[in-house]
Length: 115
Length: 115
Image 1: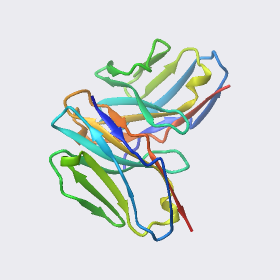
Image 2: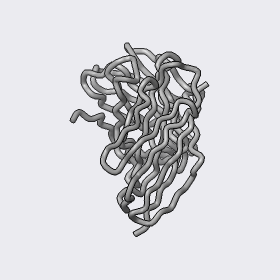
Image 3: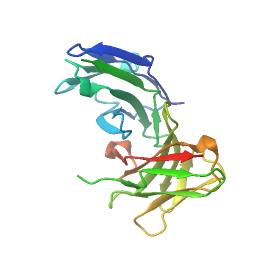
Image 4: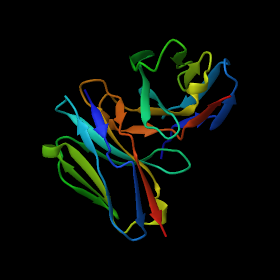
C-alpha cells in the first residue's frame, strides 16, 4: 500500500533560518513519483517539484532544495534563508505508476516563518 | 500557462441540497480527478475519470457522489444530498497522459460549506 508520512505537524522558525521538512513514504511499486506542494492561506495547491524513483539526484531551485534518498524512503525539502512568504502548509505526495495513478498526500507540515 | 479552472470558488448550501462543482480541465488532458480536503486535514483522493468512465474511486466516493463530463470541456462533481461533513475544499486536477510523469495540474479549488 502507498503511504506518506510527514512527522512534523507544525514548525516555527525566524526569518532567515534554514528549515527542513521531512517526508517518508511507503510504496509497493518500483516506479513512482514524489511531489511537494505548497498550500498558502488562500488555499490553492502550488506545485513545487516532481521526482521519479529513478532519479536520486538532489535538486536545488533558488532557496529550495530537495534530498531524495531511496535507501531511507525519504524525500526531504529544505528552505534556505526562510522568508515570511514561505509560511504555508507543505504537502508531500506520492503517485505510483503501476497501481492506480492517483496521489496519496501526506498530512502536511504547517510552516510559520516569523519576522 | 494552461490552467484548470474551478467554479465557483466558494459555495454555501443547505444540508440535503444537491450541489454541482464545476471544473474545466486543460484542453488536451485526458485524465481527470477530484480530491477533497476537509479543513485542516490532508488532501484525499475521491475519483479518477478517463474515457468517459470512472477508472478508480476511493471509499469516500459513495452513492451520493457522481461525476460527469457532459460536454467535452467541463468535468463536474455532483453531491446528491449534502451533509455537514461534506464541507471541504474540493480540488479538480487533470493530466495529459496515463503516467504521473505527465504531471498533474490542480485547480484552485471550490470551498463548499454545508449549513
